[in-house]
Image (cartoon, rainbow, N blue to C red; front, side, top):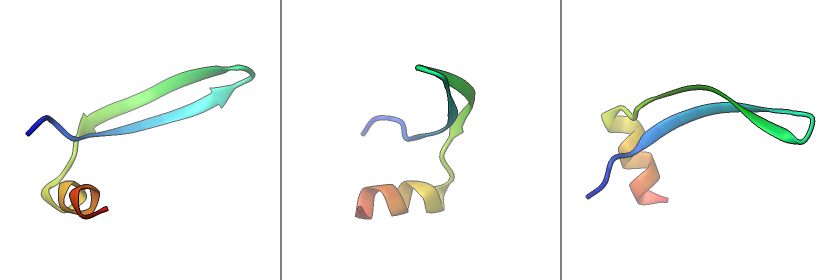
Length: 35
């Protein structure tokens, strides 16, 4: 299984600005995998 990351970003005009990324918590991974 690959890594699950949480990504925070914002749109600035026509570009995407990355704010932060981090490894997902166990609960977040479970939510992602369950759809």
